Image 1 (spheres, one colour):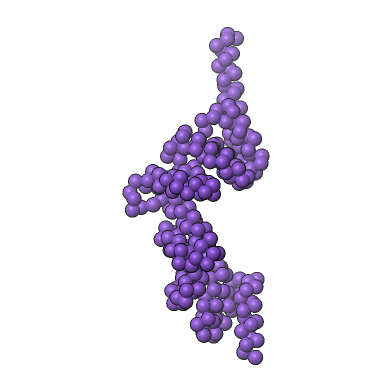
Image 2: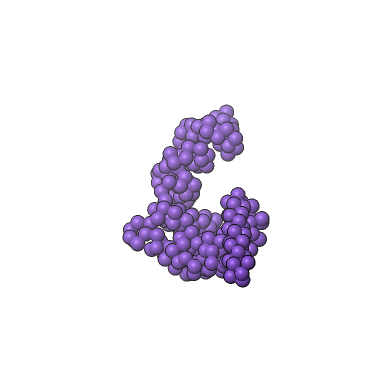
Length: 248
């Protein structure tokens, strides 16, 4: 065998080994076996560092392990290799947000949205869902600190991006109710129920809204129906017991 033939043979063997590692790493990652996938994916990059999807997967693993700076580095590298890699853009934006780099996060989100849909009036559903989730989380933070007006604004932004989120409609209803805006709150609790009849919190909160409005009969009905859909929903069960005690 000549030197050239030997080199070609070795490259062929290395290529097969790389492909096997790549497939194994992806399989383990998809199965959620991140601790097993990580060393395999790192070995892939040692042989060939130009796999954008491997960089993205290692970024996800680093983020889950709490190493946000390492995660950001992997996502940045993925985007350097493939600037149109939407998933890596969104993962990087979320990681920047967790690091407190809010301006960077917004910039990355904006670029990702522009790449996915050059028409600024149309947002890719995947991106819309991610953005809606960020507004929802921010709304929850505002609500936790009794900054209700700001919470309402964030929940409305989330619904504007993705209208079929039962948990967001429910939280918006809670925030509106705390401001005394009962009719608006009821609208959102009802929407949450229609979106997902199994979302027990919507039934419970609607019942509370009726009860606080002096409509005990309607409240009783809501909590009874809540238990029909969710037999183990303790909140509904407890409220029904309290109503029965009041009647006695």
